[in-house]
Image 1 (cartoon, rainbow over the protein chains, first blue to last red):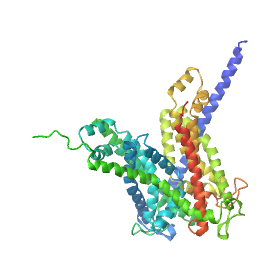
Image 2 (tube, chains in turn purple, cyan; image 1 turned 180 degrees about the vertical axis):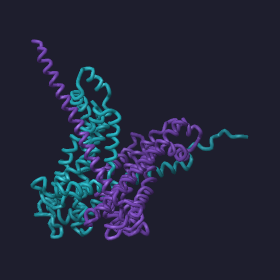
Image 3 (cartoon, rainbow over the protein chains, first blue to last red; image 1 turned 45 degrees about the horizontal axis):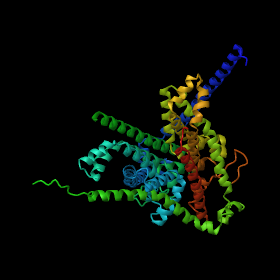
Image 4 (cartoon, chains in turn orange, brown; image 1 turned 120 degrees about the vertical axis):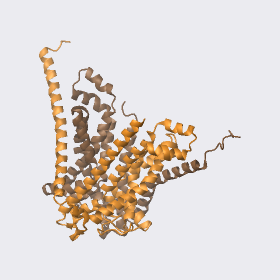
Length: 294
Length: 286
């Protein structure tokens, strides 16, 4: 077989180099395009919202179907919905995570069943949670359109996310802690409350933040569970409008509502950012503290 | 005299109770999915009996108030939007993952990753609102507008999962191909992408699952006309949007028909996720 001439060789190398250059160009172009589009979205939302944002916007009731005034009752309703959601999801979630991590090994049949059904639950679309919540919490349990029904529906939605994060946290607790506690004769119950939960606290707060973020962002599951009413809620059995539902309603059903929808969207985004940032700060502080101790 | 005899050989009563309580909580948590299924089935039973499965395909149109229940235009719209969005999100998402992993300088890569994580957390109603204000005046309420905004929404999901699966490829692979003198792109195309194949398919399937269940953005930009679209610029209504629009006033068989469409959505999504998990549970990197 004849050797390829040096001219052929350099042609092959050149073709390879052209391909390499083209690929590099494409990948950088994709990244540039994606960043540009997303900065466009973020800047639009910021500029659209910041013009109408003021302290009075946060502390006034909406007027004229939301075109004027603020979002005070909507903020209160959102926080109540999220509070109900997390108050229900936390104990069930922590309990399940502890059981999965500490008592249900990989060969435990019930453990596998629980994990699989949580995986399925995590993938159910939010509008289906809305249907379920309206059929079960609103009608079957007779809660009607209420903050309680909305919060409970969201709790079902947030559980699998929280449990997954918390379980990993408990699994990451060093085995020596458990053995040490057992050899000191500390009961399993005290081990759980005094050792495991404090050591898994960073993971628990990570799960908490993920859950709150998901709950604040949710719209479709709330439309037919906690409803549309934009008055200040007086009890958990009142209907309350969440911020996300308020944005939807202003954008779709209220001509001229865009200004206040922008402002509400900005408040929602800032709230989500604030939660994430404070969590990042807490977990970093906590982790470095733990590291300096050991 | 001190007794060395252990007080008891069985665990304290509190511990027995603890394990019992924990297991009960786990059963409650995993029972929710069963409860959802039961209630969807209960609520859709009147429609499945009173209307029958075939009429969801064969009726003349979707006019539930005059007893016509053809869901197919909405099923088609859901699938069209989902596939359009994933077709756009695959090159952009996998390109983004490649950028993070192999092309960008480390600092830029972690900034870009942080941007993607931020975007994954933006509420869908906010994406929908932005699209309504910015995209709809240009593209009109249409299938195309839905595809554009949905592809942006699932892009972070696809990119982050693809990035994570690229990160798990053993370093020997890239070291080996570099030692053979392969260029960066030949290495990616010939070695790295094929060995991350399953992880990438998982990323795409989870993106699909997110897209088909998405409600708010699609509801806000697609125009919500029940029809088979003839072109990309026609308005359409998806299954999810239909539920959100009609639940507030639906009664009897109509309401029940909406639960049937919910059941269908849940079935589709669970199927996609099951395939994705089956793929990622097996050996990912042969």
